[in-house]
Length: 333
Ligand SMILES: NC(=O)c1ccc[n+]([C@@H]2O[C@H](COP(=O)([O-])OP(=O)(O)OC[C@H]3O[C@@H](n4cnc5c(N)ncnc54)[C@H](O)[C@@H]3O)[C@@H](O)[C@H]2O)c1
Image (cartoon, rainbow, N blue to C red; front, top):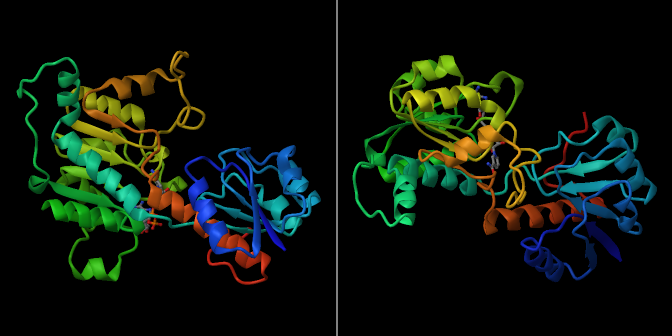
């Protein structure tokens, strides 16, 4: 009987794993909540493939241990493959898949909700309410329909974000280094990032973290933006020079900042710091600001997205172990 073994399965993933298992009675599915390491690799012995998801590196040693356990077909439940030792994977004849698109709406919705909350100064109201201060002033809101929303990157997520913001009635403009023909026809694109920065009241980033995009939001780009701009980064921390944003917030140039991803998030996000010394003073300062909405990389964290990550990874793995072409293979170098 075909056997698939899954690592690091969280409680919230279990129902979707069981759903897949129920629909594939010809496959034996086993799993652990432990990460894949050189030590835990042996748990997969006897399996035809593994399903994985972790921030921890898939080192040469880990891949070797997995190959020694007889498994070289590995399906990631997430997008990112930069923590895999690709040379070793290639040398050992690994076949790898990922899930590049699991729910653009999850991320786009989060960006839209948070942007609207910043415009309405809802966090200020929440903080006042907690202290039983029920007065309106001075935190008057800005309506989304009165804003020009500038979308940087019109890929899977950026496009959904554009639709949501248009639903609110905003005027949407966009910039992308590749123009989507449909969006082009509808006249969304401006010619340069500078033009977008000059015209937009809300700027939302939906581009990848490639070297050319690192710190694309910096002191110089902020200088070009309108006074009272709202900046939204639910994409990748390194896109934004956090110190430049803080300077913009301090001067009042930046009205508010939405931050779901952060330059120093690895090892900090998705941990419980209650009762422990908080490791990042700059992050603590951002969390405490009434016009900054920090979330710990949870934009993707919805039932819809998590189900797709689990189900698509298992589908990919099953295809590989059955000798079929998986839907989303990863090219190894
Ligand atoms: N916060 C989360 O939970 C979460 C989850 C998934 C994805 N993301 C991030 O969201 C971002 C967008 O993902 P996606 O699936 O929409 O990607 P995508 O590949 O579908 O689209 C990215 C777009 O950005 C464009 N682009 C690249 N560099 C650019 C630049 N300098 N200026 C303008 N456009 C540029 C590309 O041409 C492409 O159209 C990525 O950074 C991804 O890592 C975040």
